[in-house]
Image (cartoon, rainbow over the protein chains, first blue to last red):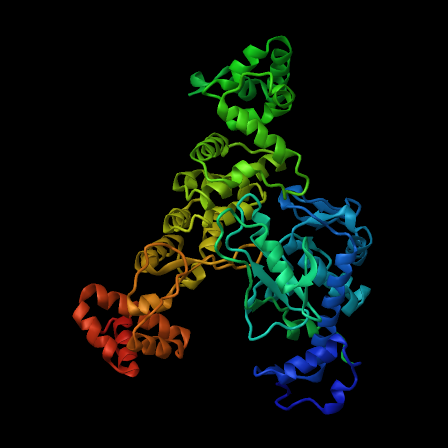
Amino acid sequence: MITVAGFPPDASFSRTFPANSVEARLLSTMTESASKYSYDSLHTLSFELLLRREIVNAAQLLYKSRFGFAVFHRSRCNEAYWKRTSNGGFQLKKNTVPAAAIRDIYENGSAYATECATAMLVVYYKAFLETYGEERFNSLFSDIYLMNWHTSDPLLKAAATPRPVPELLLGDRGYFANPDVDPQTPQWQGENVIVLPDGLYYGHGVGIHTADRIIKALNGNRKEGATQPSYLMRSAGRPDIKKLAGYYPKA
Amino acid sequence: MQNDLCYLEKLRLEKGEESCRTAFEQTCRKNRMQASGLINDRRLTFPTLYLLHPSIEPRARAMSLNMRNRRLVHILSELKTDSSGNKKIPELSRKDPRTRSILLWAVKTGYQYDGDDTYDMILDTFFCILFKTYRMTEALPYAEHLLFMRNRLNKNIHDLVWGYFQLHDAQALRRMAEHLRANDPSECNLADELLDTGHVCPHDSDKKEKYEHYRQWLDENDGYLFFTEENLLFSRHPRMFDVDEDRKFLQKHKRDYERRPMKNLPQHEKAHLEELHRLPREDRLALCGYSHHMHRKDKSAWSKWMQCPMAEKLNKAYREKEGMI
């Protein structure tokens, strides 16, 4: 169930979203859930719905962008906006506009190649860009470093540390673990995914598929004599909505 | 030791990589047998083989390379041309003692070398195979050295960290714990993060206290540890291993470090676990710790304690924790 300042939100609130939209589906899942989703204000709830919608969009667009896959040792980026660092990450170049650098990834996807964790960071930044708008985005994220969760922005700390959840929601970052992976391809030790509508997931390097298809793909990268199949972990990386909503103008 | 270097090693270390490459290329053109002899020298190291691979590869069939070098030249040819890092070489997938010794030789003679991205990727792959496929504890010191060296150089450590913990053995944790008391703060910090000491040690402890506290924790929990699927791709703070609380509470040790659910438990033990699962984390930790200590001290007293109502169990556990027993 959902509560806003201790009470269920007004029925008219859900009617503001078109049927089958990401927001409407989220509201339906959260309302019908046995778990409690509590918000201090309608502003925070609205912001979460908006951000989750943009995460879903950003994931779908990244898939279409031909953003390449490569292990960190083989990663590459467009040097006009990013500097490839010695550990395979991408550091925003000085005097570069953050919004333009993020948009370039979507426009020149094939100029880039990296692993799934970095792709998730790209998705989050694109979602922030669309949610906050260019001006605010540029001031909030002036020093972007795309690599792993460890080096991520303080505003992404919560999303970087998945916690057990009762259910996965649209826009969540999930993780498929592959315990018996072939050690020749350690990059397939697991797959970070964004939860999309209709039972689909976006994973960088595997594409947009159902859980079964992703499990099948990971199972195809197991060691000889493997006994454990890959599986979807019951954890999710979720951004700190309350904190992020604080940077979003109130209507 | 410098005296024990072979010709090519000496050349690489004293005159530089370019001189070594040029000299070897010239030898290959003039006298393939001599070139083969230089590569087959038992004192050759993996970094030199890697460096000279472009000269060896087109002539490999015509050269009289020993089995180790022949196989490594083939492996390097496959891995070097893999643009995304997704290629699999069948001979590395099969378990084979000869492959194991070849890979061990490569990491043993190659771990101190600060190579390019491709070299690092190849060495990472070898370590991952040695740990996950062959459970090779012998490779731990080399992986550790490389891990901390790369960390100091801000180079990539993802796969190396993953491989290190794929050994699934507390030996890896014990060795890593030694770095908690290192002089280099970056070494302490990395060990601290990888061992996730925040869950175990008091926050205000200095490095010596942290080390001792951690070692005690390891000694106490060795029989209940299991390795998880968490890693640096998954989380900022992965917990790559954990304690099986159920086993610790019921005092059912394991012989390995895999997560093994307990099967066919008698009804009264199932009831104990149900009670345990209903408690908050702090209470569970106190009960499991007390159960471990009591069982070691006096098995019959432990059996009696297990029969007590939960409130009494907790009372005794906390009294021991506070030093009252």
